[in-house]
Length: 175
Image (cartoon, rainbow, N blue to C red; front, side, top):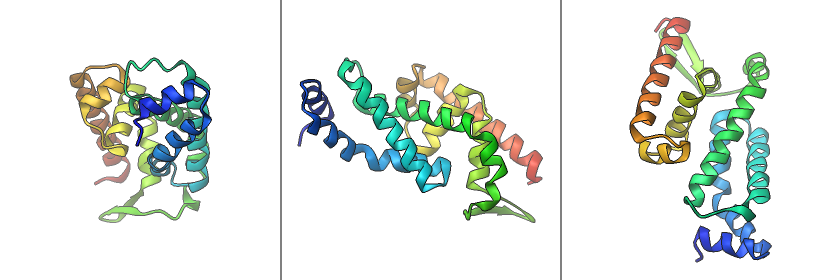
């Protein structure tokens, strides 16, 4: 089995089946990344397709400075940020239509969709780190590489982001 870098080299030599193999290899994880954020299969499919279209257009210029997965995570984060920004109001107005798992405490409950809406309100660096840590379960070192920050900075942004989420959730739901 060829490595991602070997497939990219083949693609750069005009072998389109190499790109198909990259998509097959990574589509499932990209799709599930977006499904956790959107809670909607159609949106997750659209966002996954968007990521691979962006990669297809730019992969000819891939410089092999980092692993392909780092490049892919960056594309996912950028696409997720665009989605969250573009759809804040839509998500807020249509949350009641989504049959989702709820998390209860006393008389209150919160859906995963509501949690991701709160994540979307975090400052960009905190939001990116929290999404990568919670959604992709990446180590802080990997997150730092993807986001061009130190491991320590990634940890600090995660800490501040989680504390802000706790503050918002406690204020809103009186846990």
